[in-house]
Length: 572
Image 1: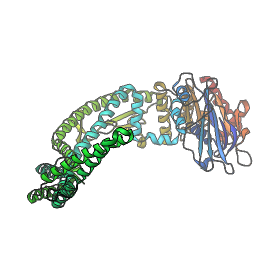
Image 2: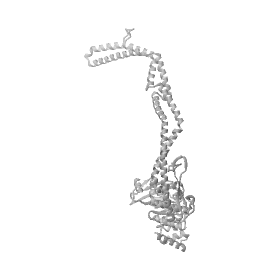
Image 3: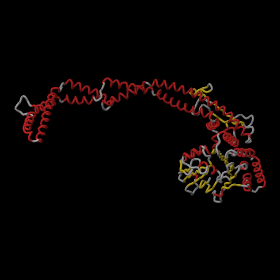
Image 4: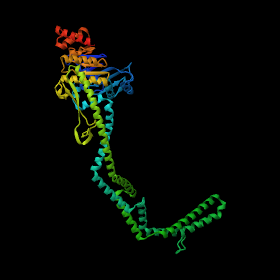
């Protein structure tokens, strides 16, 4: 990794060993920036406070070896990244204003893509992770992770059934709690549908009645106008001397017919005159029929107005016109059918809920059984690891419990509370020595013991769900003496199958490293490129002496440092 303008680091390169790398240095020298840098490369939160004062941005670049075909390589290629001779080049830039950019294999990518690769590449553990392990939910997650498919398969099925049960229960609660509202809505719909059914409106009836009412209301004027027009066209028998239009047009046609043979143009006009004569005769006939058929009956007008009033009463309540009223009736009938069917729906949902609860009971029991079996194996494996970490008499176990709840599901013959991960409450217990009762690790473990339990858990995980790199940030805090030597020895053993990076203050741990990096500040308080060095030979002995006694030139410390290195080499 190359780190620039991050915290106290101005510009430094960190070269990690394929095996065990220990990062050491004085307190405040910037060792934790190594952990922070790796976290940024793996999609960690970008905090502008990390940018070195006076710098516009901080940059972390890293080269990570990834086997071809590995899940991380596949995901990177999906994001458009290119592998460089079997390695991924990753960079992360944080501006002092808080903006963050990420690049993967030469391609700009969302920071979330880096986070997706994190689980496949590195397992990071520090003091905050130890605190996380104290939470029962994290302990249950750790046990489930260790159990593998034995828990994962029924847990996936349980999750599906749990979500469906939640949805069904919500629907059922809504139907039952809104029963009164639904009954009121149904009554209103029935009333409206009955009212519309009593009137029996027809599509377009309102427009037809309006036209008829207009006609009936002006019947006398219409009859008079029709009679006058008929007289003008066909003549008035009471006044035969007045010439009508039909007679005049007939005379005009006869005059043209007499000379039409002499001019085709005049013949065409004569033909058109004939058409006019026919049209006038037709109109006169229809006017006579209109006047004869015109109904001026006041009773019919009253009936039309009464019908219109009934339709208007409907349109005031259910729509702007008869078409809208009929549409409301259609929708209302469908909604009423739905409401009337709610009782049947309640029965169906109740049956489905009971079926799902029974299914959840079976799956919750399967989860409990699988966790109980895995817990025994996990506890035995962690206990065995603690023997090699200077806790030979410690015993780790799991308490798997359920809380009774009358509204819960049946597990083991009891009705217990349940949640999205089952009905089990999982707690990791530690008995540090014979005769001591098992107690939750939050109460039964000292800081040093908790560090060793955490390391033992991670080593057990490494055998079942390995990742290429493990990073421990002062996970050995609170440990000293023989226990520190055993932690160093166990980390070296883990490094035979994976890359291990440890930020440590303990010389007993650093002595077992394949490579020791020293982080030190310059006189101006910054860490430059020369401030991260690989210690070898005499330099490594001097640093271990400083870590042991605070004095690089103490002969006693030097002898002890050389003895530590010899012990580590003998174990290699």
